[in-house]
Length: 173
Image (cartoon, rainbow, N blue to C red; front, side):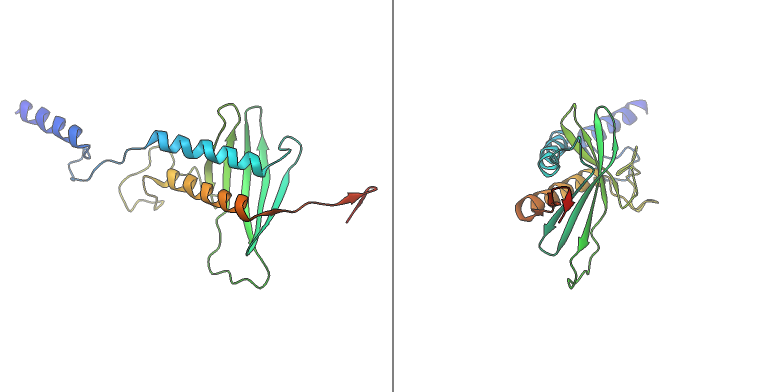
């Protein structure tokens, strides 16, 4: 009897099936792809955040609205940045853009989304892969949020125009 149990366990492992015997495949993180997304997001954010060590706020005008990046927290090796968007006056806003918080890891040169709309951590620890679950999250929620961040930043880099304060003789214009 024990041999049959061991054989079925080996077969489930080979097929990457759920250990509870429900016949569903187990979600596996594509770590190289995830790290590539985080690396690319770091580079995009660094391009959008000039003078990161001195400034707290950046605004980029884009078709249809404004992207706002604000430093939430700083430490020796990390910086947390809040990303939000505002629709332009007169623009039809049928879908509210999410508010994201991204953490930049300067030593690893990576950036990842840590909260979406104030709910975090994205994906959490040991995400309940059964669906539906209390948070209604899929197992690949974290990679999805990071891919979305990458697309949003790439759009801003391609179409955004930086807002800045013009200061002459100590007066803002």
